[in-house]
Image 1 (tube, rainbow, N blue to C red):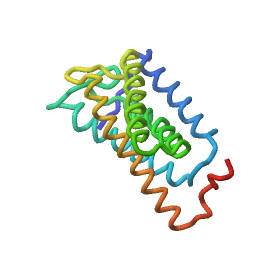
Image 2 (cartoon, one colour):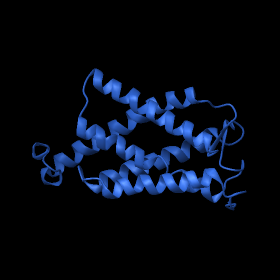
Image 3 (cartoon, helix red, strand yellow):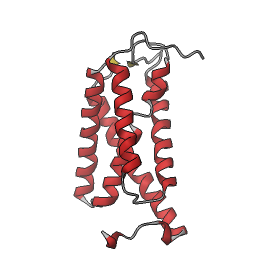
Image 4 (cartoon, rainbow, N blue to C red):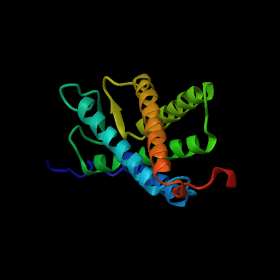
Length: 175
């Protein structure tokens, strides 16, 4: 598969570059709350999910949206897969810090899904996505599912790592 350059270097490329820099700067400077291996697994899951979704619904015959300047795959499309990774890490970081339970957990999932829809709306305004048969309500439903999966994956990984070594986790009582 040949990766095409962008048709024009404009708002969508700048959106991807600036948001990637800001997002990963946060990841780099955020206090460590859990092992880096958990962060790596969350990023890998997030990027894999984005790639699978795009290949399932953004290409013919389904073709619900285009990414960036052209309907064919271009090299900025590859970088766009990493846009959501820092925000998935922020989601689980804040989840770990706030530890919502019961109805607060449900509110957390809904609130974070709304944040993701707002972020996607901004990316649509910058022409990162061009919707054909897709809309933000579809995105909201998808984010409800994906946010729940991200948090559940994080909970599983955190428990797995805690069971293996209590010493790798910072003490929550020290805060």
